Structures are given as structure tokens and as C-alpha cells.
Amino acid sequence: MRHRLLLVELLLLSLLLEQVIATPMFVEAGSGLNGLQPDALSGRQIDVFTQSGGEGLSAPDGFFGPEDGVYLFANVSYNGWPVVGVIVAFEVRTANDSIFATSGEMTNQTGTAIMNLRLPRPEMLIEPYYGYWKVTTTVAIAEVLVNDTVQFKLLHLIPGDVNRDYVVDIIDLTVVALAFSSTPEEPNWNPRADINNDGTVDIFDLITVAVHFNQQSW
Image (cartoon, rainbow, N blue to C red):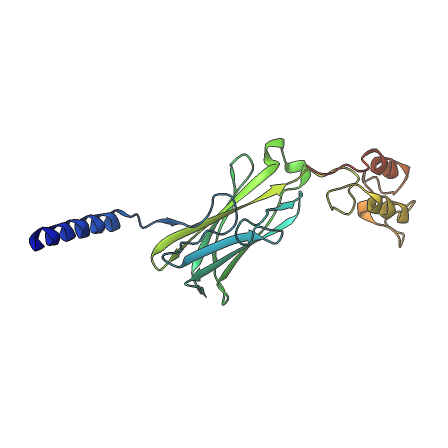
């Protein structure tokens, strides 16, 4: 009887070892959308986010407009401690899944790697570029590759959105009114209020705000 129990134990141990050996060394820490899904068993963790959102578990994504600066932060830790001096690979893809930028950045004393980029000007953007962009980060922690992803949305700009808050409202109307009749040589000149870029803040700029009043970026 004891021999049979020993044989069963050895068989179970053998199956357990086969399962451990067959486990791949590549650990995917990210959810594929945003936020934080650490490898709980190994303690290896990376969390990527922007200055507008995406930090932590199931955090909301941020949004940006053309020409905006985007700061990407990747926090790297091992068993809760920051991992210093490792290279994090960043890959940024547009809404149509084409590669926009790549970079390798080293983590600082807090375990954070930072990449910054400037989104294209409106005249350089085509329709497929608008929508959700995806950032993937990959890092080796204790000889295991770990990654995380975050998305941010590139919004269309609405004509008349003078202060770039993605809605045309009373604030935009006020900005244009304060600069009304001004030219670049005058103290109340505001280049953002010159919506049609004709060198004067005039009735045409006010009409643009009125036509698009209450519209939001999408």
C-alpha cells in the first residue's frame, strides 16, 4: 500500500514539474487596453500612462488634440520596489495601427521611464489618424519580459474652440470678444482669437464661434 502511495506521489510531482517547465518565460502584464495588471506571482510590474489618464487598474484613458504634447510615463517595479536603470521600450501606434514613434528610455531613481512626443498639426492629419492611439511598453525585469499598454484618443478640433478645451462655449466667445478689432501690433491681440488667420480679430471670427457654439470634439 505504501509503495502505491509513493508511486502516486512521484507521478503527481512529475506532472507538476512538467507544467512548470512548460510555462513560458514571457509574462504579459498589460490588459491590452489600459491600466495595470501585474504578474502577481513574480512581483514584476509595469504601468504605462499619460499626463491625462490611464494610471492604475482600469483607469480612464486621456484625450488630446492635434499639436498637443503627450508625456508617457512607465512605472517599473519588482515586489513593490522601483526598478532603477533599466531600458523601457515604447511603441506608439496611430488609430489606423501604423507606427508613429518608438523610443527606448531608462528608468530614473523612482523607477519611471518618460517619453514625450508632439502630435501632428491638423493639416498633416488624415481621417484614419483620429481615434484611439495605442502605446505599448516592454521591459525586462529579472530576466523576464513584462509589458503594459495604454490608449489615448486623438480628437478633431472644432473651429472656434479658441482655448482648446474641446468644446466651443462662452469662454471662446469671451476670448474673441476681448481681442476684437485687434491686430498683432496691439496689446489686446490674441493669435488664437484670429480663427481664420487673416491678421485681424473681426466679425468673421465671431461668426465662426457662433456657428459652432456648443459643439464638442469627437
